[in-house]
Length: 117
Length: 111
Image 1: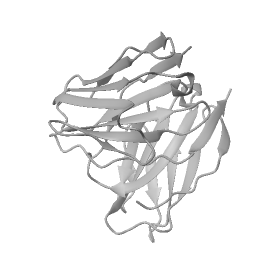
Image 2 (image 1 turned 180 degrees about the vertical axis):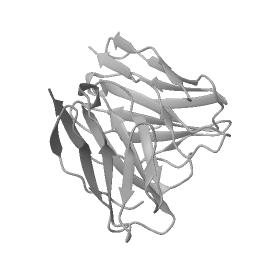
Image 3 (image 1 turned 90 degrees about the vertical axis):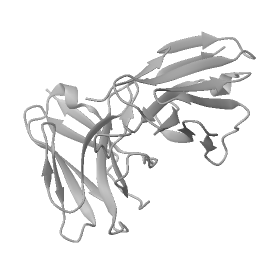
């Protein structure tokens, strides 16, 4: 099956610092990846759609200057949380849709737990 | 994308079939029913999807009513590892389309 990895799996940082999270499709290529955020006991909320070679599309209410997304290749997208604050502490999850192979579903990474002190 | 309605929580005994309902009365003709599940502190896992015919794979079966306004996900022999939140999502069948998650059903399998 299609595998998506995320790195790091967890990170603790001080308030005001920036944190980069990587999302990689290990055995397939994807022009589109998605970034979600999940707070405790809540559902996943889509933050943005990451498109290879172009700017990300952000959902309403998500600050694009705070959550920087770079989709540098067909297998890698990164999310940088800039000037992180405690309210940014959350579980960040990415997903990717295979470019080929007739897939109509998305595959999710294992998530990155961010804790901002 | 059409909205879905699912029960907040359900319980099922280990070894029995778990039947998870989903209502999607506003589904459009080109929209599929997708099911994902999320085990605690992990990323969601794809289970199955279908348009109008019943579907079965190694994980589950999907039964869609003839009018397509509701569906049922069936886990035939539930195990403790099936304890998770199950999400029913309706959208067009294109992998690059975003998924909009509702609150899902928290399924607890009891020994």
